[in-house]
Length: 98
Image 1 (cartoon, helix red, strand yellow):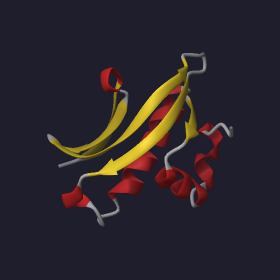
Image 2 (cartoon, rainbow, N blue to C red):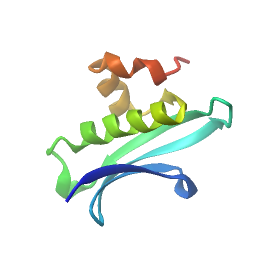
Image 3 (cartoon, one colour):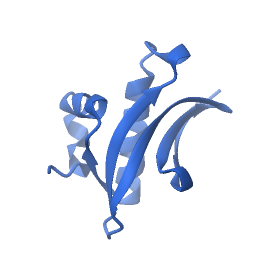
Image 4 (cartoon, helix red, strand yellow):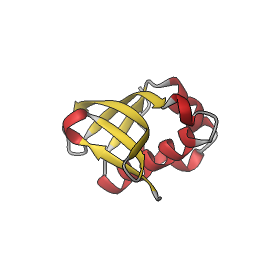
């Protein structure tokens, strides 16, 4: 199967899937509808049976790619994403410091 990250607008979350299986998600809140839209990435979850497989990083990178492609800017209040960002300076272009 192919791992993909999708924005589930109605649920305000990005979801990492492998086929029909949900592997994890990032919850967000829309702070400003924009343009550009500003979202707070609040919490990252990897399903317990998939932890330790590096999927948090796959999910984080996928979310950053989606927000960049959509022209969205983000604030990170999720500790996992803050830590991930500290190791991935290439993602700083979409992050707004508050």
